[in-house]
Length: 114
Length: 115
Picture 1: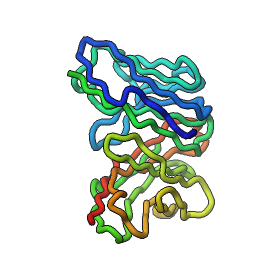
Picture 2: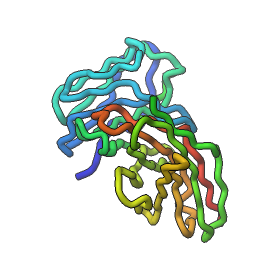
Picture 3: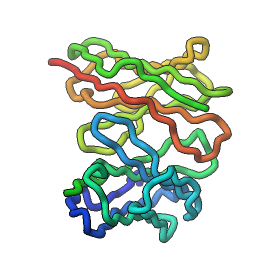
């Protein structure tokens, strides 16, 4: 199983809503990532978890709150987002400690903030 | 600091013709290099990687890439393009012995294969 599963695939939310994006993998990867991708641009790193602990936060606004409840799951909690936060949100995972290993990406959640 | 450059925003090629998508890199030491493909509204799919050894790397869907250390390049190639190859292609780099530091992506190249 080389899949990273993200839910939901699409999400429309108002600026006062609270919602969560979910990501799951069963490859035994202990590094998990959240990326934000705008149209026709490369993915921008948001957060990295290593062994379920936050290891990198790329100065992301506090309206995005990541959570890694166990080694297979990664959540991104959203609150009071702005329209400019509309984007494709990608989750990825990889083995820890081996820079030669590729990351596996989910299909993404297309988020629209209205 | 490590970086990759994809000099072409767009590459157009006729179906059946060979295709090349260019990538150059900058990293201290020997790099680990990756190619990913992204279809519309989808995540990134891993195509191939160069770690060490043979400079010609073969990957998924008939793609291959050639590592050239003197030119610091890692161009993606395919002998005969298909319309279904039309997508956004990203080159990425990671320095060796950098653990699970995130991949550094190029800006992407949009490939259009015309029937």
